Image (cartoon, rainbow, N blue to C red; front, side, top):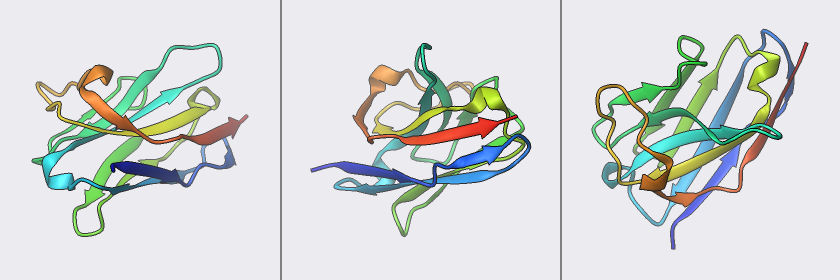
Length: 126
């Protein structure tokens, strides 16, 4: 059974930093692409970042230069380092695992991610 458990969400002030973690079990990172998505209240789900099985990364336009995705293959954990946070970054952040590949710097479509975590809330105040 594949399980993803996110942690690290919190309330911070604008300009602050957070690091989200996603622990994966039931499948090896070496066989999966990992992604972070977010959904703010009243808005559609948005792709934030992805890292595929060979380490290629992709980022959403709204967070480029501020967020960094990385993974620890030994621990089966993927991280999202979020710096220079803005109030518009407030959302529930979801970790996902799937089979899509990062191509031309684009986050794989959400439909290619078969497994999702429960989400962790990030709130950024001005």
